[in-house]
Length: 580
Image (cartoon, rainbow, N blue to C red; front, side, top):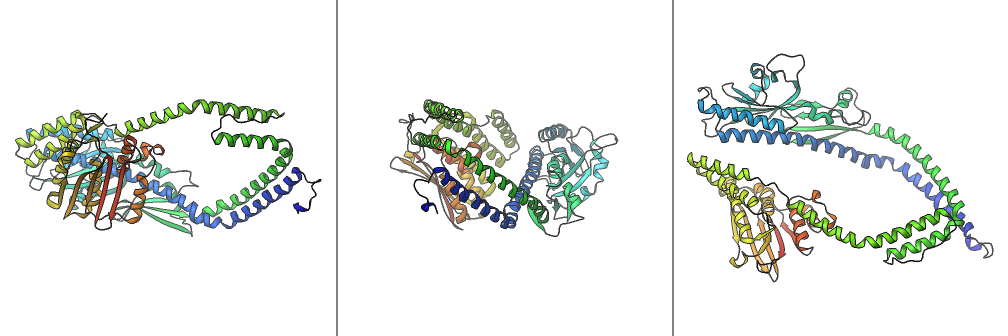
């Protein structure tokens, strides 16, 4: 049709009318048809995936709360075991234990104050003697609770109660009490002739406020927390309280694990409600697209003749700048809007040209700041001093295992705080690793064998500090701990021309091919495009190496499923003499 128009009658304006008709109206019809036909697919995939992401976020938040409680429980138990505090049926509180009980009370108070989720910590001995983080409690109210006798009978089992009133938290009666969810477990004390204690942690219901309230009711997802071991509902959000009596016909149940084999998050995605939202969205979107098409068509038609030429020239100028020419030919126009745009572009080009050097300097400063952020750490002098005291007490008690383990841990802390230099030699780093492995030996005993293959002449090679421990820790966590008996860890150092290669090999379960591929891709990421907050574990080590030595160096991984995993650390071979 266009070809039949004579040259004398053909104008840009007429061509634009035809092109606009085809390029705006036809895509509008196609997009509208595709949009309507794909609504169900969007619901089944994108919208449901979005709601599943919300459910996953709720799962992560709940896991974080219960993990915090587990950490507080382990810290309290460690304090009791360390101080050997027990009050059994056949003994009274000895004079020497008074200070220990007082210290335990202060310790519980510190943990309580440090964790905003905790409403109270309680240590209950077999003699019904209670030590609590609360200043005053009514012990008889607590001891008469059903979960106390249940916990004594179910040793080593974690017990969770539903939300209840904690009227035992105060010494005097009052009208209103805190609402809490209780987490309790019985433990048998080592080296105390089978003495037992109960550790109870009360969790503030306010910790679950986001879960309970969520977003507005018309957008909230019905969810509740189920204790599978006791077949009870611990907590439910506000919308589920309404929803359980009138469930949607097309509901989709989603199950997420919070605590393994015990606590689970149940959620229901309601397709019918999603579809009702989309019915109005289809009509509204269609009207908006139609309006945009009409406005765009008439505006383009109106301005095409007057602005096409200068805009095209401006486009050419922008292309020149994009190719590195910061002195392009700028178009001229009589319209002040276009003139302003051209002038602003000209000013921008001038500013970009003058800021190139500044940007380069800022990139270098940013890389340096990221490196410092990666290596920043607390300087806990008091910790290794305390470990020395604990070691002395253990030696006085004749407990060689605790003494040796405390000595190794103290050496680790001394290595952390004793020298804040960025680099060290390989020999000192390996000594640090020996102390770390000594502690692991107390955990695993003879189940794991460690082999070092390190030529003596390479021990003087300069490396960045804290390079090996995260890699070896990863081998324990994802390999040797899973394998258990018969574990083997090999640390080998060799020089390949001007490169130092440190290999860490374990005979754990290996890495699945898909996960191995993702791990390799993460190792290839450009450190300039990766922030400190995005990294952890092996990625953190890899990022540090690339920042210090360049992209040619870093970590590589190889694995054979069910047989072994090998991590190679590649850095330049630098001696103390040529290290700057």
